[in-house]
Amino acid sequence: MGSFAIKAVAKSVPQKIVTNDDLTKVLDTSDEWIKRRTGISQRHIAVNESNTEMGVKVANQLLEKSGIDADELNFIIVATMSSDYQTPSTAASIQGIIGAQNAMAFDINAACSGFVYGSTVLNALLAGNPGGKGIIIGEEKLSKLVDWHDRSTAVLFGDGAAGMLVENDGSSSQILAEDLKTYGQLGSSLTAGHFPEDTPFGSNEKQVSQYFKMDGHLVYNFATTKAPASIQRALDQAGLQADQIKFFVMHQANERIVKRVAKKLSLSMDKFPLNISDYGNTAAASEPLLLSELVDKGKIKRGDYLALTGFGGGLTVGTMIIRY
Ligand code: ACO
Image (cartoon, rainbow, N blue to C red; front, top):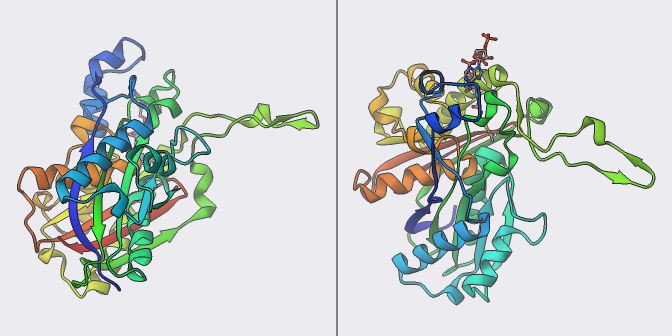
């Protein structure tokens, strides 16, 4: 592996907060049900911000924090399943707005595993580019993919963006292990963004839904078996024991999933920080949002071992072990 040196982390979430009580005004649900079944109290919903605008805020903070000019960037990767447009990509829009004229920019979509998948891609690109600099942002505007009449999914998701700026500065890589797996045969258990294909020659209109459709139980079982297995493979790859990891920065899809994964690994919840209560499930933004908060609060120090794990649409799962 090449050099992957994390220079800065940053986040940006929309201003508007929607509480569980706010949801009870538009859905047949309750604060008690949502908290007990998911751990979520509120989520941020982007009513005034585009996905691109959230990403621009993150990118500008990353540049400022690391003292790097936009035109020094070589790569901008955005992990998202809710880009403002099919084209241009969110990454290309951000590149244009911040003036990163020397960066190639593209989106990747691995749903809630997107940040881990995207970081892996950035790691590979930087490995062949000594002195290269790149940004990876996980960001979502999931509120536009939510059926606000469907209580089984509407209560789960939120919007937000977070990421990191990384440089191949010649030091040893901070990524110690990468474990990525895809289970495409399970893809239909979690879908969103299927739009009508209406041509003069035929139409698929009857079978489509642009909104989230999810087999919650299947995804729950998937997450609580595949995530711990991925973590274990990544630990083995890195030659580390679970108790050497300071924090398991897990995708915040459901507090119960995180607790179950901790139990399966025989680890205390002290090693599994949570912020789902404040943000809900923000898919690709989830792990960097939590990472960024932990760094801002001073809970992570340079040299700490961390495991970042995502799981979700695809279905996909991914873990990377980093030495922060
Ligand atoms: N408010 C009140 N009641 C509700 C709500 C709600 N918002 N939603 C469902 N219910 C009801 C159901 O109708 C059902 O009622 P019934 O017993 O009368 O039939 C009851 O609550 C129980 O429903 P379940 O679906 O069995 O509830 P469960 O405890 O399994 O929780 C949940 C559902 C939260 C979706 C859970 O299965 C889960 O977290 N699954 C994993 C989801 C996930 O991780 N997704 C991540 C991937 S996302 C991505 O990749 C973008």
